[in-house]
Length: 215
Image (cartoon, rainbow, N blue to C red; front, side):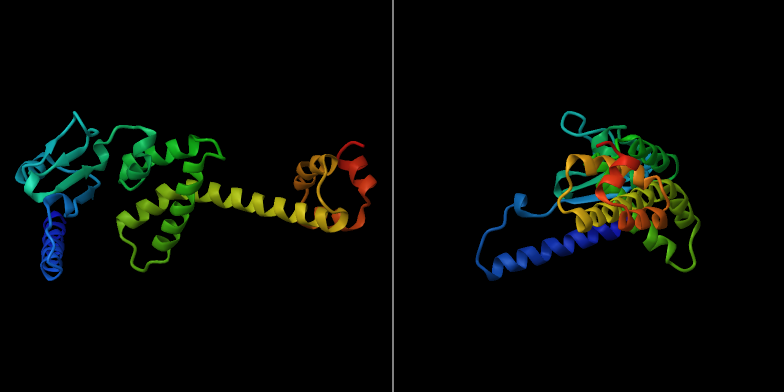
């Protein structure tokens, strides 16, 4: 994987230099892109073969830099520290690394923006993998590891959709929601959808408050 990535990087370098020449502009090393190779793991032999070294003064453990002329770093995902900052990268890992990251994700509060954003991406990822043909062992492991996060996202999305339905029906019947109507929403959501939909269409404002809230 690393060699094709480097070849692609050199190809980009060549195109950048040709463009600079056509435009008669200078191109410094800092203008060239840097390649970040995300690897689920990286053996000592592999890292040594590329001359990759840690830079613990400036970077996290698990990030190995090739000699400067390559402008390339290898991120060994399984060696990254267990912090919130590395969570998304660790979800891209394999095996226990990925399972640990998913567990950390699900331990975050439901309204945490990072959790919400990652769960949406995980859902798309899982659907994409499930819809593939000829699933490999790795694909099946990804599906299994992502399933709990996907199920929780689906449940939260369903609940949010049901709440939106209740709020919209209340607005249609009674106009803008006041504090008293806000109180009846959660009790109504405990009922089956067919039941709360019927009650919202049949009961008056006062009847709803007597049954599910307080006047």
